[in-house]
Image 1 (tube, rainbow, N blue to C red):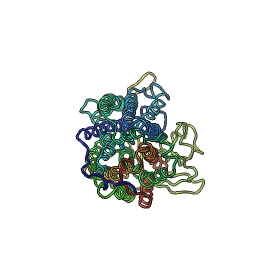
Image 2: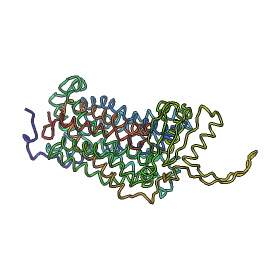
Image 3: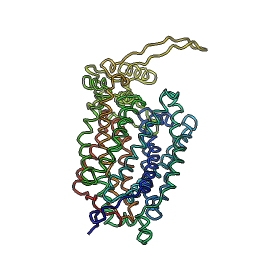
Amino acid sequence: MATTFDDLPKHHAVTRSERLVITASSLGTVFEWYDFYLYGLLTAIIASQFLTGLNPTTSYIMALLVFASGFIVRPFGALVFGRIGDMVGRRYTFIVTLSVMGISTFLVGCLPTYKTAGVLAPAMLVGLRMMQGLALGGEYGGAASYVAEHAPHNKRGLYTSWIQITATAGLAMALLIVITVRSPVTGVGEEAFKAWGWRVPYLLSGLFLVVGLWLRLKLHESPVFQKMKAEGTGSKAPLTEAFGQWINLRVVIIAFFGAIAGQAVIFYGCQLYVMTFLEKMLKLDGLTANMLLAAALILGSPFYLVFGAVSDRIGRKPVIIAGCVLAALTLFPAFHALTAAANPALARAQATAPVTVTANPAECNSQFDPVGGKSYDTTSCDIIKAMLAKAGVNYRNQPAAPGTIASITVGATTFTAPDPAKVKGEDKKAAIAAFTGAIVGKAAAPAKPAEAGKPATEAKPAVPGALANVGYPAKADPAKIDTVRVIAILFYLVILVTMVYGPIAALLVELFPSRIRYSAMSLPYHIGNGWLGGLLPAISFAMVAANGDIFYGLWYPVIVAGATAVIGALALPETYKRSIDG
C-alpha cells in the first residue's frame, strides 16, 4: 500500500535555511518567466519591427507564431533537461536553464530589425525564441520537484504554489517594466518606445541573469535526490522508464488530458490572449491595456497561494476541476462584459448596427498569408474581409449563391463591393479605395509644400465612413473606459488561472516517483502549456480573422477546459496525501 503523509511525523517542517533556498529558487524562476513573456507583451511592436512587408492581419498572426515557436520547442527542452535533472541533479540543471534563457533574451534586445537585415532579422529572432523555449522546458519540472522535495508533506500545495506564482509574477514584472519604459514620464514615450525603447526591457535581462545566477549558485541539492543518489535507486534511463512503461505512461496521459490541457488554455487565454483581445479587438492603446492587466495580476497573484493551501486541505483534483468548469461556463460572458466595460461605444454599435457580409463562401479566402505574396483583391468577398480585418471590425457571415457579388450591410445600409471581373488595373484600385472610404472613412491628409515638379497640396479633413456614422469607434475612448469594471473582470480571469495553476505543480510531483519525476512531469506539462496553451493566442486570433466574430476564438479554451473537466472528474486520481520520498 502507498505511503501517505498521514503515516509520517507531523513535526516535519523546513528549516529557515531551506525556506531561503526555496525563495531563491522561486526568484530565479520569476526572472525566466519575465524573459519569456516580454515577447507576448510586445507582439504588435515585434510585428512592426521584424515582419514588415506582410498585410497587417498576417503580420500579427506571424508575430504570434514567432511567439509560439518558443512554446513549440518546450517539450524538447523538457526531454533534454528532464533527463539531466533525474540523472545529474536539480541544482545543476537550474543553473544551465537560467543561463540559456538570460543570454537568449539579452540578445533579442541586440537584434537588427527587418529594415536593417531583411529576412535574417526574423530568422535570428525565431532562433533565440527557440533557445528560450528549450530553457523554459527544462526549468519548470526541476523547480517544482526541488521545492516539493524540500516542503513539509502536508504543505506541498502551499509551497509549490510559490513556483506557480512565479509565472504571473514574471508577467507582472515584465508589464511594469514595459509600462515604466514606454511612459512619457521617463522621457521615452510611445513613439520612441516603438522605435527603439522596446529593446530596454530585453537588455535589462542581462542584469537579472547576474542576480539569478548568484542566487542559484547558493542552492543545495534537494534532500530527496541526495537520498536517492546515496542509496543508488536513481534511474539509469528515466525517459525510457517514464514513457516506455505503460504503468507510468498511463499516468502521463491521464495527467495531460485530465488536468494539464485545461490548465494550459485557461492560463494563456486569461492572461495573454486577453491582451490581444484588448488591443486588437477592443482597440485599447498598448499602455492602457498593459496597466489594466498589471493591476489585475497584482490583485490576483496572492490567490495562487490561497488555492495551493486549499488543495492541501481538500485535495488537488476538486480545485482544478472547479476552475475548468467555471472557465468553460463563463469565458464568453466575461469577454462580452469586458467589451462593454472597455469600449462601450463598440459594444453599443455591435448591438444596434451589426455588420453583415453576404457572399459566396467559395470566394472567401483566409486572411492569413504567411509568405506575404497573396493579393486580397481577386474576389469581391476578399475585398470586404481584408478591409474589415485591417479595421478590426466584428461582422457576421451570410452565405450567398454562386455568382453573387459580395456586399456588406452596416446597420440598415448595404454596400456592394467592386467586381474584380469588371474592373482592372488602376480602375480596380480606385474602386476599392472609394469602397473602403465609404465604409471605413478617409484619414485626414496634412498639407504638403510644393516640391520639384509637384504642386503644393491643401490639408484635407478626415471623412467618416458608414461604420463611424453608426457609432463604430476607430479607437477606444480612454474617458469612457470603466476602469473599475475592466480590472474586476480581468481579476476574475486571473482567479480562474490561480484555481487551475496553483495546485498543479503539487499534483504532478505527487503523481510520479522521484527516480523519474523530473522527466515524467515535465514532458506532459510542456506539451500542454507549450502547444495547447502557447499556440492559443495565434490560433484564436486566426479563428477571429477567418470568421469575423471577435469572440469566436474563445471556443478553443472553452472546449478544451470543458473536456478536461469531464476527463479529470472521471480519471484523475487524488494525490494530496501521497508521500513523494520514494
